[in-house]
Image (cartoon, rainbow, N blue to C red; front, side, top):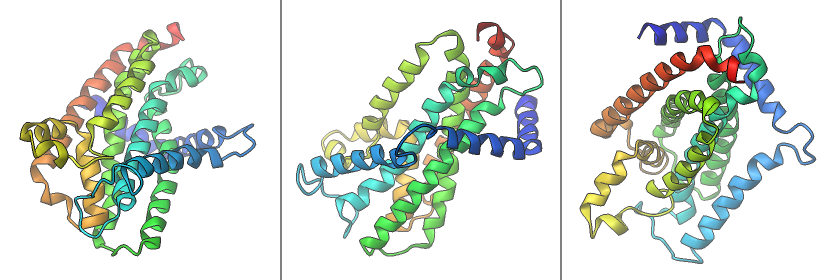
Length: 271
């Protein structure tokens, strides 16, 4: 626990440096790219269009469980946090290799690198939140005070990505297949989370499937985004899920930091 407290103090102390490096990482993504920042939005928007076409008005015609909500309005609050989480976890997993020159510097605290990558992904995420708000305005969706709650659920998704990221980034230095394992798990995870489909199509026949889906901690994030944007429910309306999510996140964070601390002395030797 002392290690966690020390890490938080270090982040607060060097917050300007961390923010500067995060902004530099954000800009670096588009160096040498002709269309630059356009690519940041193109792939996620194409993904939304594909799911909308297959599951929405022109395909399976999935009916959202929220009254007076079109499929795309229901879909986007599920996909926006998933785009952020998957990008953050992938980026954090490979951050030690990407910034190997900083890892080898004795004076640089390596634990900052996952945080820097996370903040860089957050900048992208806030752009998508603005697009989501513009979509809701275009569809004339009612405005709820709970929209502000998106900040809380974004923080929750960030902590979950960082918790897993400390573990995967440390292991990835020695076991390069970890990045591929993370990619496969994320492909599997998006279908284990009811983002494109209504979970009722399964739980109506097998109620235990609902329990299995809720064991996935990201279920809490997706449900929270939709509560905030569509129904106006505050996070304390899900007390059991809130306690479960933060319990899992804290345990994973402690395990990840312990693994990171144990392997840290050998990073520079391998890289």
